Each structure stands twice: as C-alpha cells, then as structure tokens.
Length: 122
Image 1: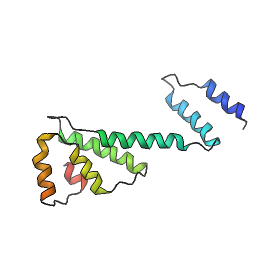
Image 2 (image 1 turned 180 degrees about the horizontal axis):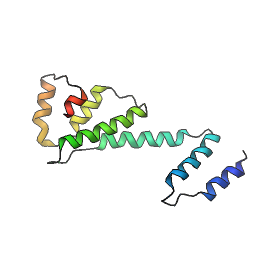
Image 3 (image 1 turned 90 degrees about the horizontal axis):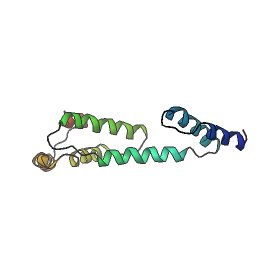
C-alpha cells in the first residue's frame, strides 16, 4: 500500500464527532502499516491508569457503586496488562474513599485484614 493511499484514507475520513469507530479503525490501519500502533495503545493505557488512580468516592455516595466503578477500571487495566498486584489495587481503593472512611481504613491496615477485592467492595 502506498503512502499516498494511506494519506487519502485519513484525509477522506477525518474525525467529525459522529464517526469515532470508523475513524479509529482507519487510523489503526494506517498506524499498523507504519508499525506505529503503540502510539494509540500507550495513550489508552495512560488514560486507564490515570482514571483508576484519580477516581475518588464523594462523601455520601454509594460505596457499592464506587466499588463497581473501581472494579470496572481494574478490569480495563487487566485487559491492558498493566500488571498491578492485588495489594496495590486494594491500596488504591482504600485511598479513594472519603475521609469519613478513615476509621475503616485504619482498622483494615492495623488488623491486617486479608480480604479479596470483591469482599472489600461488598
């Protein structure tokens, strides 16, 4: 495939806000040809990691909903093979809780509670 044809693919299929899937597919075709797919993968990994570490539960909101959100983010990280261990996941989840949960966090850490991520969230 010539570079001119690849350029035409991107020029004729510019992102317009409603064609994300088509645009991304075409961009991946061009990047695959150029052996540059890692550019997209790196950004996706960065965004997923940032979302996981930045997520904080707001005071008064549902712990269960927050837990489900954190589980969803963890699954994305696993799919991307980020490679965090369970202890790190638990630490980040505990750090994402609001200050009113500080007694629980202290108790969890002081008493060496060993819970799975699912047990912690439920």
